[in-house]
Length: 481
Image 1 (tube, helix red, strand yellow):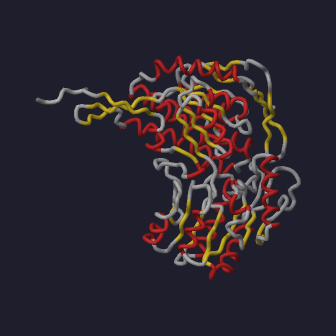
Image 2 (cartoon, one colour; image 1 turned 90 degrees about the horizontal axis):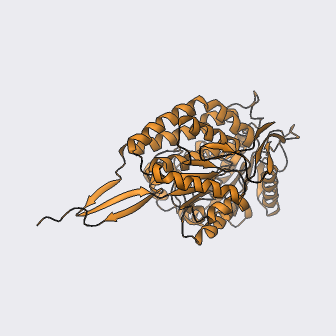
Image 3 (tube, helix red, strand yellow; image 1 turned 90 degrees about the vertical axis):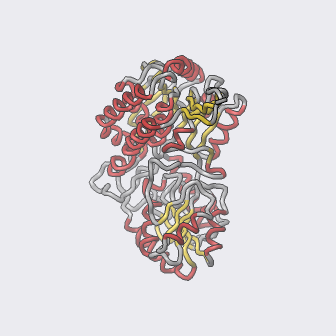
C-alpha cells in the first residue's frame, strides 16, 4: 500500500491541517493500492497564500527564464514517463498500451506546445500611440478529472506557468497519484516555491474552497456539467474568471458518400477507446436509414472484436480496453444500459453485466445500441462508458438537426468521401471541435465547447491566452506632430 499523505505547498511536502484519508482503488481488481489525504479549507488557505506570495516574483520573470525552466521540466518528465504511465493505468484502468502511447504522452505534448508558444508570443504590441500589453491573470485554481488525468493537469499547468501565473491544483481524488508524481517532476525541475501547489480533496470541500476563495483570480475546471455549474456559482461572488471544459454527447455523422465499413468500424473503435471515458467521444452515430442494417452489422462485428482485458495483462494488446474507473461509474453505466433496453433501443452487441469470465473489476461489455431515437435517455445523457448509440436519419438536414439537438456542444465527427462535403456539414455543427474523416488530436488547436459543454478554450495559443489579462496603456508613445 502506497501512502502519500502530504500536500505540496510552497515548495515542500507538508502535512494536512486536519488528518483525513481516502483509499485509491485499482479498478481492475477493486482493491486499494494507495492512500492519500483529503484536504480542507485550511489547507487551501495555506496553498493560496503561498501562490499569492510567489506571484509577485514569478509574474516578473523573463521569457528566457521560463523557457529554461520548461526545458528542465520536460527533461525530468521524460525520466518519470514510464512511472507516470504505470500509475495512470493502475488508478484509472487504462491499458498499458494506451497509458504509454496516449495518456502519459499528452503531458509531454502540452509541455512542448506551451514552450513553443512562449518562445515567440507577443506580450506587447503598439496600436497607434497605445500599447496593448498581455499580463498573467494571477493565481489560478485548477480542478481536474480522472479520465485523462495528466492531460487535463498539464494542459492547464503548462500554459499557466508559461504565462507567469501561479496556481493551486486539486486533482481528482479518484486518480490523484499521477498528480503527485507530476508535483515531483516540477519540484525536481526547480519550479520556485509557491508557484505550483497541490491539495488533494473532494469537490464539495477543497473544490468549493478554491472556487470561492478571494485569493484566486481564475478557476479552470474540467469535469461534469453539474459540477461545473457549482464551480461557476461559487466563483461568482468574487467575480473571478472561470474556464470550464464539461460534458459532451458528440455526434458522428456518416454521410451517404462515406466508405461505410471504414466509417462505422472506426467510429465504434473510437467510442470504445479509454473504455468510452472521454468527454469528446463520438457517442451518437448517425447513419443513412437506407444503409442502417448494413451499418448495424458492421458495428456489431467491430464491437464484438474489442478485447476487454486487465490493464497490465498480456491480453491488453493495442485496441483493447480496461475497466471503467470506479464502482460508481460502473453502476451508472449499467443503469443507463438498462434504460436503453427499457426505452426500446436494440442491443446488437454487449449489454448488461461484466464480460464473460470476469467476476471482479469494473469491466463493462463493449455495447452498441441500434435503432435509437434522439429523445431516448441514451441519446441525451453522457454515459461515459463503452456504449454507442446508433441513430438512422432520412436526410442530411435531418442528421444535422438531430446532431445539434442536445444541450452539449463539445465535439463532432463527419465522415464523407468528399472533403468539401464534410467541410460543409462541419460548418453547420454547433460544437467547439469537429473531426473530419478520422482526423486526430492537435495540441496546437483550441479544445473546448459550445453550450453546456463549457466556456473558454484549452490547448495551443487559445489555451495560453486564457491565462492572460489585456491591458491598454494609452499615450505610451507621443503622437507625431
